[in-house]
Image 1 (tube, rainbow, N blue to C red):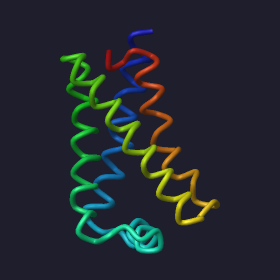
Image 2: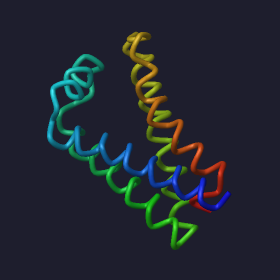
Image 3: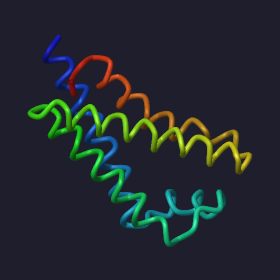
Length: 115
């Protein structure tokens, strides 16, 4: 079980890290929806930094469990906020995307890969 939890945690961290990198480099397929949702440009760097910090926190959590748990909780709250943002923008067809990032983080928390 430890191996599975570790693999899931590392994959979740890489997946969220990819999301952070994509936002920080302003990939068109990431920033176009943010503009459509009404997320101010001034927030983009902060949102990318939050995802990057969460990604690193998941990895650190493999060695310092409390950091991983806090990072995981923070990321779940982050992506829950993203779901709310998408729903408020009435972009129902894209609500799955923040859930695709939240799912592996929840799996890592449940499996204990960060606890």
